[in-house]
Image (tube, rainbow, N blue to C red; front, top):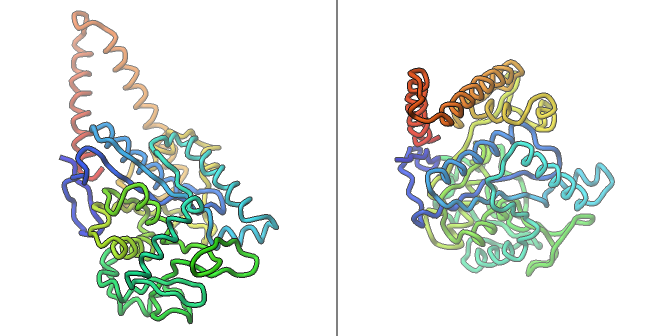
Length: 363
């Protein structure tokens, strides 16, 4: 029996997809303004394994990863380099997809770009306004968190505590400090799309729910990402989706991986301590990097170091030696099986049973 740890309930629960054998799975992808680093790779590699394992267990998985290709960071990077925002988004989307290919991540069915879902985003915002969950001020549209009584349930925070939260954006247009932007009014020099509220562009949180509502409907099975996305991003997703559709839960299983650390700090572009996926691949093959990232349970912290990567290389060599021996055993007829080969096959079968047992226990 497969069990998954759900961040919302804080419990391991038996995995029961909404639609029988069909599994709908969404994972937050990159904001494409720079190269992805190994911390990002932990998300991509782990959920690649989740999708592969679910398929191995007989499920039909529809796996979507979004690409945020319009964002303040993209606009700012374009200004710094003196190029268009489209140039930045296209450039780093290309690099991201190349990195995914080099890491042998092939389980994703659809990479969904935010800019390719603007009509769906606008429709969802209109629905939220019509239902009284959102309001417009000077071309900006905000979600009114006080109207959604469950706001804070994923991150285990009370609404009144969020007023003083460090991550709450200060904006004089808001009715309440914790309200968040669904649509941002156009500013000189920024990209825009036409909308019922004038020229503008989508906020960050609304992109993902518009995409999942389009392809999965109002409810689906698995939403994944790093623990740094629990609040505000995933909290806001729940509010938007459940307010728009009236159906709960929006997601049955919220899965969050711990972060990658390096020299006592989390790996982060803001801290300037990143190792890009490309840099890591220039020193180590993709299987070594995958094994390193998967050698620690996804809900535990990993420390990045060359020593641990070297250890992963040695483990990989031992694994390939075992695979070679297994292939030799399988090629021999049973009548010629030696005692050593028989014992090896017994151990292999036992090991496979253990792997499945461990994978079924929250991967």
